[in-house]
Length: 149
Image (tube, rainbow, N blue to C red; front, side, top):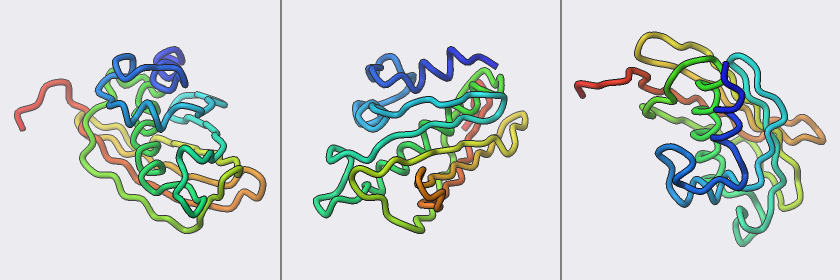
């Protein structure tokens, strides 16, 4: 496990160039996310919903949730010792509740499987105060270093 690699991918002040393969939107979304714990196959983070990542109605944007599932899913591979964060094959997100501006959200990403070429991660978004599930994502990535695709 390389905790420094996990921290680098989630560093709130990181620029897109610092986060391998990211876009300015990724660094916009990841800004403000605090790394709470990183252990083998698990990453725990939290953030507060701010107006910058909320809809005009005051709720966390669904695209932010999906982007965080992507970024935190990649971080889990680094925490589990896999040498690459891979390429996303599929991300599915089930939204079961909303989060309003000012609410603190806890995000737990867990490695479900890391094979020779494919890895799967589960990402749960919970309201920190109540523990209520807000969204759940499943992230599948292609892990092979070189591809013939």
